[in-house]
Image 1: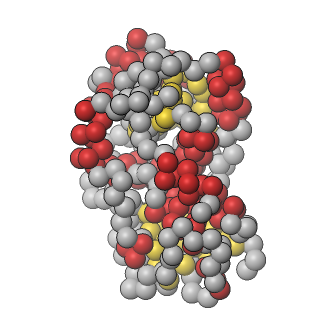
Image 2 (image 1 turned 45 degrees about the vertical axis):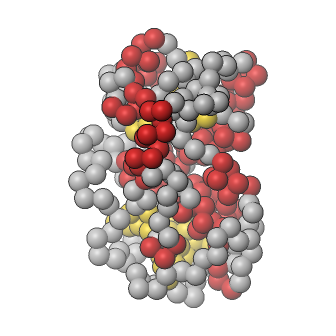
Length: 291
């Protein structure tokens, strides 16, 4: 089983944090991770910073609905991205890469999407006129005993439930599911090395666990086209921020990291003539370097 698959199985959204503060050593390691996390697939300007929690930020979280269930977090990772066609995907990709590295350090996180321009978070980061802050995450050591509210939220959204592979991955058209073996390394033929990458996408987190990603493999080619299947009316209430496009960035991150670990190399491209199945939006294509 791949390193990233193990991380994905281990990582959960943490809303309750213990009393242990982040010491200078761990903050330095976080700083190193953040400074190396601006390299996005499509070049949108992305930046991140570590903000230790003040009373002001804690009060602001109480106004964010279920996000107000975050308790005890000693710090937050906050960030901004320059608006562009692929800004949400780039931001989702970069923040998820950060989150996976924090998970490897034994730290808890939780995706919080929203608008933060008029918040203490924005006062600290000072986003420019052409920047948005699509999401942040608390960071700290998980509480030994998650609170009742956290357990209720996880149950309500079905946090551990995932769609079956045949609803997410296809060859050619939606009537032909890709044969994917869970957690497999290697594989045969065209899918060699990509079984684990597809499973890593399936295990990924998404806003309200909607799992809006769909991947179509081009027949007889190692080309994987990523599409968004939007949830009608979902996540459209914040200007310039699309939660489900962030989700596609998360999926891209999982796919790329796991594929690389499996010995596959490729790159993200935007194909001008990529055919989009009905009801879906084309996002990007992973094109294997061996083709």
